[in-house]
Image (cartoon, rainbow, N blue to C red; front, side, top):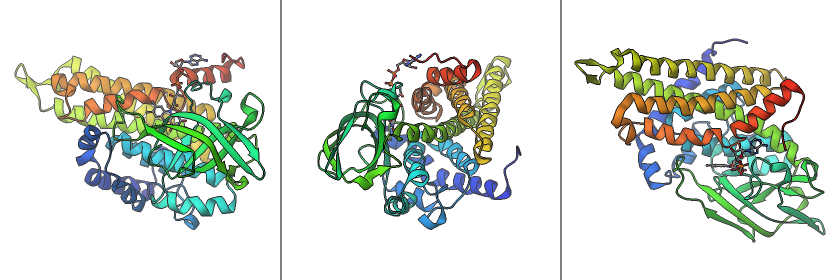
Length: 383
Ligand SMILES: Cc1cc2nc3c(=O)[nH]c(=O)nc-3n(C[C@H](O)[C@H](O)[C@H](O)COP(=O)(O)OP(=O)(O)OC[C@H]3O[C@@H](n4cnc5c(N)ncnc54)[C@H](O)[C@@H]3O)c2cc1C
């Protein structure tokens, strides 16, 4: 594994950072307070290549690799996790599985729009009574001639009220993971209702929604992959998703580090910069080590994936470590800022609020530990 980025990857990082510093960073607090980003940013992100980064050029993408995607996620995490989530869900949790499992017709219908940012996707797995235990989800799809009728409830769906297409996981067979099928459902279908979930601790600029589907009719060509393969598709999609989340957590930690170094070397108490006190440097050192360790776990997982090896557990380790580290680093960063860290004049308060969800979604820290523990012991502690 090469621990340096190529010239192209470094140029990509520089261009991404320059764009985000201009188009996102100056507005992130305003969007956070408004509980919505300005959606005019979405096509601009598309033009910059964020949505199509891993999609082939044939569909308007850049055809770049997972490591470059991780670089993009790190920069997005540093700039604004709300924006990062809009991109990673549409591109990573919807665009990527369409590319991996879709028919040519499905790819042609959805991928060019997703790559440009003209269309947004959302990923409908979690239900009110089935979060970590997604294998027993209850949304149901029944046949009606050649069509399917889908009925069920989904909760906490990122991009939910904005998305044009929802990757809906619904039960078409018996109980358990093998009875689940994935469907690409246009969100303007009759019977598809969505309600905004407000009052979030963090990621406030991002639309999170409750979805309610009542006899939503889709034709047979809405099935993504094979009938009964939905849970497999969801889990393999989340493997890559977890690497992306871990990369974006690395961005939060790196953002915290830059902010605390800048602030503590200027802020004076007792006649010298607070960075000159060992107890403050202790916190800064922890943030610095967390940034490096998180990034290395991300790159290791990306490297395995790019070499075609199984990277599922490496993804869980990266996601578990980086998400916990992001919370720890942001908490340390607030401490380094003193009272000024508790208000929105500096980015660290928002980093802390945004970081908090990272240990929850795409598999909680407990679920990642169960996956890692099962892999080590060959004994499942689930259920
Ligand atoms: C802002 C936000 C955005 C989200 N976006 C999406 C999205 O786009 N699409 C989507 O499908 N979902 C999304 N989610 C949902 C998210 O993935 C779930 O919240 C998450 O999987 C946890 O499920 P739950 O909330 O039902 O918690 P539960 O599963 O009820 O867990 C509660 C607690 O019990 C623990 N626990 C559960 N089972 C076990 C076990 N076997 N052993 C030990 N501990 C256990 C958990 O770790 C947790 O601490 C989002 C959530 C949030 C908050």
